[in-house]
Image (tube, rainbow, N blue to C red; front, side, top):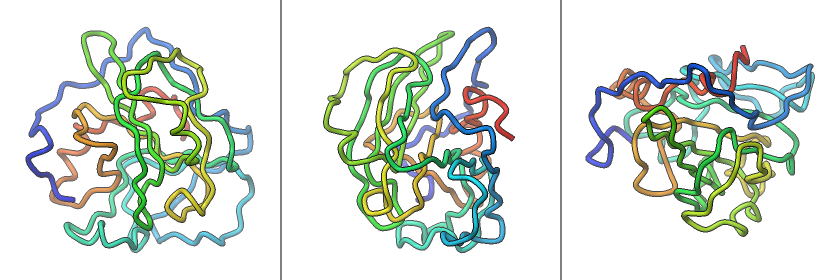
Length: 209
């Protein structure tokens, strides 16, 4: 989608994380790969590990085949992908509450999704966790609270996660979501706005690459 009235125009203040500690969202193996999707996506490509990281602010031509990506030619990734086997636990990176949840069920979409709400240093931060298992949504309701490190969900399989190899799309947002969805890939017209609205997840995930 191109930016519309649901999204604040900005500018957005830089995300403040100094002095804070964050829990890993996925416990990656030591041999995880850092993927390069700048030349496209091949789900059958050889992989050295079942764990991996897909990069933030990466142009991914021809990767997003769903109709929802056509308008605005949305192919710049504004989250981080954390690849892990289906069923792998997904942990809360910081204390917070469940803000939105639901199934974005279109092909190539997020599938089951949780959006959490967090507050620190006078900031409200939202985090989208996409491509989860369907059963991950069952225990939660809007407003439920959790602690850092608590298991929020499980990584979904291809049959339920939008058709992707198992991974979690993790995205920070300084914009309050209107539903259980945020644009995880944007077009050139919204690129600079999105880098402010959706800060680099490595600010809380650490230096993954």
